[in-house]
Length: 354
Image 1 (cartoon, one colour):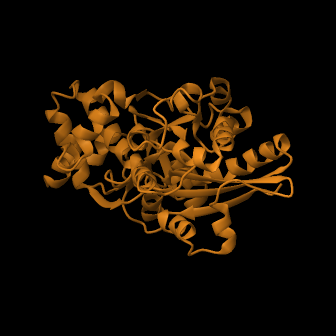
Image 2 (cartoon, helix red, strand yellow):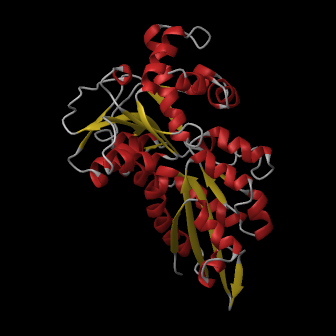
Image 3 (tube, rainbow, N blue to C red):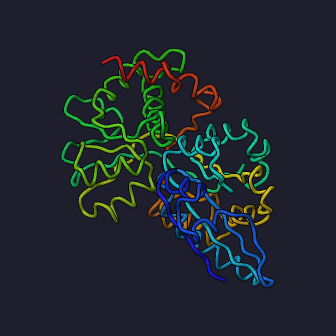
C-alpha cells in the first residue's frame, strides 16, 4: 500500500480537484472507492480548521501504516483542506465533498447536521462525545516579553497592539474573544446578563487589534513573519509550534490566569461517504484518533489528548491550567453565536464602538 497525503491550504485547491482543473492523478483521489486487480483503493478528504494541519499531516502517515496492516489489499490516499473553521464548514455545506470534518467548534458541526450532511448522533458515534483532544487560548509575546504582558487585562492597555484572527471566519478567533470575555466576567464577578465592566475591557482590547486575519495560521504569519503587534492571541498548540518552528527564540508563551476550554469535535460526513462506499474507512480514520499512538502524537504537538494517562505523561509541556467551558458560562453554541458573533451582535458592537 502507498499512503499519499496531499496538503492543500484553502478551498480553491480542493475546488480545482472537484471541478477537473487539477491533474488526472489528483482528480482520481477525489473519487469513490475503486477496486482494481483485487486491490481496493480508498481516498478520503479531511476538511479541517486552520492550525490542525501539522498534526493531521503526521497522523495521516500513522493511520496509513495501521490501515495497511489491517487491510493489506487496500491503498488509501488522504487529502487535507485547512482554513478558518467556519469558512471550512460553510464550504462543506455548499458542496465541498468532505469525507470527514475535524473542527474546533461545535457550531460548525451543527451547521452540517442542519444541512443533512452529518448525522444528528455524531457525538455518540465516537468516544468522549467525538472530541479526541482539547486545547486552550494563550498569549504569544515577543522574546523576553518586553511589554510585560501577563494576562488578558494587559491587552486593554494603551501601549499594546494585538493580533488575532477574525471571529466572523475563524473558530480560533471566537475562542480568543470568549477567553477574554470569560476572564472579564470572572475577574469582575459579573454574569453574562450583567457585563458592563467586561464590555468596557473587551472594547479597549478590540481597539488595540491591528489586524483581523481570516484564519489562525494567517494571524501567526502576521505576528511572526510580518512583525505586526506585541501579542498574538492563539491556541496553545499553535503558540508552541510557532515558538519551535516559525519564530524560534523570537517569542515567548504567556498562560493567562483563566482561559477558555476548546473542544475539537470530529465527524464522518455520512451523506458523502454512504454514497461513495467509504463510511467504513472514514470511521476507522476518526476512531484511530483515540488509539494511544495518535493520542501521544497529539501531546507531542501540544494538543491535550482525551486519554488522561497520556496527558499526565506530558505534564511538563502541557501544564495544569484553569479553564472554563464556554457552554457552561454562555449557554449552547447556538446561543453563543446569537449573542456574540452574528451580524450586529456583541462582537460587532464592541469592535465598532471605537
